[in-house]
Every structure is written in structure tokens, then in C-alpha cells.
Image 1 (spheres, rainbow, N blue to C red):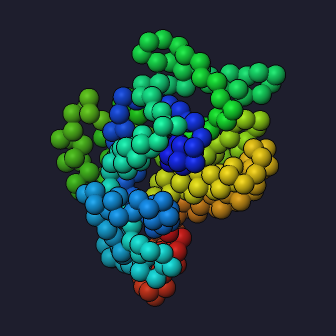
Image 2 (image 1 turned 60 degrees about the horizontal axis):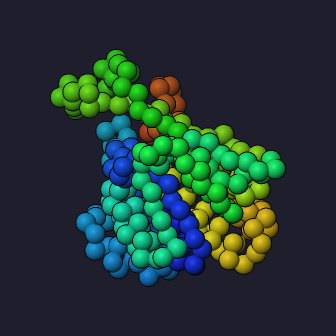
Length: 299
């Protein structure tokens, strides 16, 4: 959505295709990081955006083996907003869509699911879409793949078995949740891709570097992608812009993927010795140092 907004704002005719009838997906993240808020300020949308219902977290704390420890401190960041905003992602997407629709060059089609790419002379030339009225073809000079990792919930997983022995209130919550309202999503990331672009086709966000949610950085990294892509497309021919965009964003995004995976492994380890070492380090690392370092990582 942000890519569509930025391109339409620059006068580029753009069509955004969303397979669902709305943006109300339960698995979407709810954290808007300082780097994203900085971009909203650059776009002169920040003040209006922060009028939407949200909460602000300037510090984060974690409970490790019964001990509350400072986890992240954002008050030292060199950004306008020194906090994480907590807001349902559908509110964020609806806000962007509402502003994007003010541009004549912008079009948003809901219930339009991309099912295939269209090729001409071995180059991507558009997409084939499954829509309520049937299959449609959209031809384009530029195709941005931002369709994530194609993850759907699996209602067949036995959640009571999967979470047996967990602390309260997990068992209580599961018992109170009807089977029809449950879904299961694996936490996984995407192995590094050899490249993010080919011909007229370029990847951003989860389509390029899906990551586990341990750092809450998925949406933030996607927005940094589209901002970088916008800047390069505005200044360079398409092929060169794609190369420079990938060169500038691939390494930082993949570093976050690795960090998120490592944090998950450390936090969720079942090895008693490793868990004891983790807890000991967490208790004895100066709180200010840990919070400062994590604040910069999560920005």
C-alpha cells in the first residue's frame, strides 16, 4: 500500500491489488516503529496519523524466568518519535489507502487475487488476477511483488497438544476459544534470495525477506524498502534503480532476518543449560545497556 501511495503521489499511474475484501487480518502486526513514523513525518502525514487511536511505548520490558528486565529503550533514538506506536495494522492500511485515493493516478481493487505472472519475451509484463467477475489481466511497465509468504492459517492443528504444559492463562484461553475461531500460523522466515528483481518485476517486504515476528520489524522493513525504491526510481532508469535499490536494502533487511531468528531461538530454547545461561546474562547485563542496544535494533 505504501508503494502505491508513494508512486501515485509522484504522478505514476498505479493499481494496488488486494485479494481480501478488507484489511482486517488477525495475523497482521500491530507495531509502528520509529523509522516508520519518521517516514510518515517526511510525508507530512504524521500528525494526522497519530490522531488515530493508538498507544505509545517508549520502553519495553520482558519477563524472563519470573524476572522483569528492561528490554528496549527508544528514548535515546535520533528520531522525531522516540516510541513504538501500537495500532491495528488494518487502521494503518486504511489510513494510507484513504490518502492514496486522493491522487487521480491511484486505484485500489479489493478481492483481486494475483494468481500468475504474465510474460512477454521472457520478461514479466503484468499479472493475471482472480476477481469476483472472473479472471482479468493487468499489464504494467513495473510489477511490484509485495504478497508476503503465502501463509494461511491451519485450523486442523491440535492446539491443546501443541501448548500442553504452558503457563496460565494459555490453557484457559484455548478452552474458551471455539474450534471454528482458531487458526495456526507457523513462525518462519525466508531464506536469502539470490536477487530481488528481474526485468520489470521487483520484490519488496515479506516477498523479498519474510522474517519471524520476534522483533516486530516486518512492516517497518517493508516501508524502508518502498521508500528506497521510490527514491531510486525517481532518479534513475528502471534497471539501474532496481540494482541500486537491491544493493542498498538487501544486506540490512537480511541482517534483521538473522537477528530476529536468533532472538527467537534464544528466547524459546528448551535446553536447560542454555536457558539458565540466558537468564543469568539477562539478570546481570546492565539494564540501561540492554535497553539502549535493543532500542537501536528495533528502531
